[in-house]
Length: 156
Image (tube, rainbow, N blue to C red; front, side):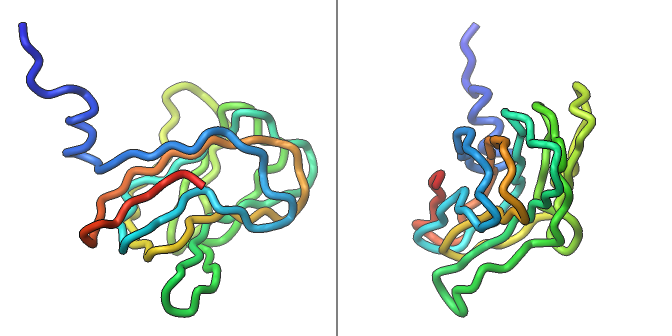
């Protein structure tokens, strides 16, 4: 039997393009870039991080934001920061514009994080900001649709 539509094609049609960022340590009490948006605006369908090295047990919050290269160019949080204290391997986090960054510390198989909030990002960077210097690593996955011809995303 011939398969005319591959799994990746179904995802592309249903959710948009996918870009993954390899696991990386958390920025030390600073803002770090996780994705670079170039060539125009994108519509973010989902942005999910997964802890790959446990976060140390000390106070720390994480916020997801944007730093456009057009307009004011200032870094803006997509919502309020959430605690990632002692987040174990497998913890998921997601952007939740207008609310707190969603963090699921349960790491249970099958636990879902809502990524229903769609948002537009101008050319520039998608960022994460931490409130402390903590050990821990997170990998990130982004689903997006280009709004402007030529818009594309690469991992930072």
